[in-house]
Amino acid sequence: MESSTFIYFLTASILLTLAPGPDILYLLTKSLADGAKSGIILACGLVSGIVFHTTLVMVGVAALIKSSATALLLLKIFGATYLLFLAFGAFKSARAGKQLGIKNEELGIKKSSALYKRGVLMNVLNPKVLLFFLAFLPQFVDLSSDGTSLRILFLGVVFAAQALIIFSIVAMFAGRVRNLILRKKNIGQILNLVEALVLALIAVGLILF
Image (cartoon, rainbow, N blue to C red):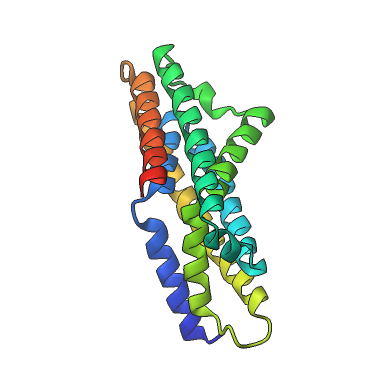
């Protein structure tokens, strides 16, 4: 791959990652609610989903899914159902009057693992992410040359790496903001309601668009 092509790919990837979208919006909300560490763990899950989708593009499964209206519909339904389930959980926390505190930063292995899996599933069950990478990655690869699959995988890993860096910066920024609002009355309930709303909107967008 020529250096100019790689620079163009990296620039496009960074701009796409920074663009307001469901992943970065939910990451911001979660980091505000539970702290930077939670946001970074969630980010690791999200970018793991990117590598998963890249692998599907590399082996040709993504093209098969795209050609099947039934497979796309099922992915949308599973994805939207999972997001609504998460939204309901956030809403229940808000109703229960969850308050913010420093202890939210002290994540155990079990909670960290659950948060990581949440990020993975949010991405894996979103067919729009799969279709995006199916359309985006091949643009920067000569499909007639040898080693096309490995080049696609390389680009997917690069995209995931820059996304992890940007997501982590967003999480740390939100964590700083969180520290400033810890003492605000009912802020925990408000942020949980915002989280529930964001997840519900993502679920609706997944089905309708």
